[in-house]
Length: 188
Image (tube, rainbow, N blue to C red; front, side):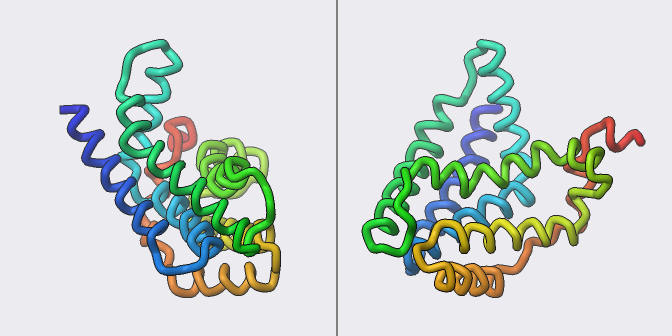
């Protein structure tokens, strides 16, 4: 039953991500949209995030888990598409010339790091990282930053970032705050 649930949830993630990669747009726009979709997915698909964390913990403990299945069915196809997308963007002259994997890590890693380290930021900087307006600002910042960082022509990248943010509304996250807080933060 667990495997079936994991398969269902991960198929949604894979299909949603593939739809972004297959969109009729330039490689740079698709890459920015993929980074934004990744951020929105972390916000809206808590069950996938929980299952992934559980599988990573199992792996670290040396237990056999479902991670090889996830890699084969979800992550390997998505990374192949990322690789192709970045290489296409570099070949076309739209994106800066850099190792494709480093660009993927930069595009997605900022999202993962933000959510994983939020309890630390909350204590160090005395702000609420899961407040709707803070999440909205972070969402905008990641797209604008990448628009400035990965495009050969920064004005072009900034224009694409603005277009994406304008036509991709933030998902409803009014009820997300409590879902992200650790039990220690909730107890305060």
